[in-house]
Image 1 (cartoon, rainbow, N blue to C red):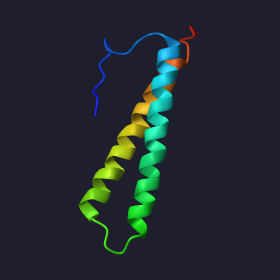
Image 2: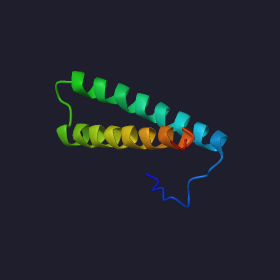
Image 3: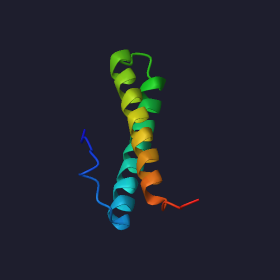
Image 4: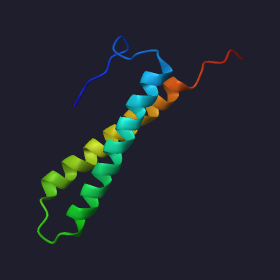
Length: 75
């Protein structure tokens, strides 16, 4: 997993949009994997928990990048 700091995030909206697309795709893939594992009677609960935590972390990252795409408006 990549760790992002404020210095690493490109201010370029196109780059942010591309990264957002990648994160959403990974989130969808994890959702599908979790669904498959949950349906299996012999699923590894530890692995399932790790996938769910990763999915939540991705959700937070997606929200962060979406907020970066919204221009700051002075009130």
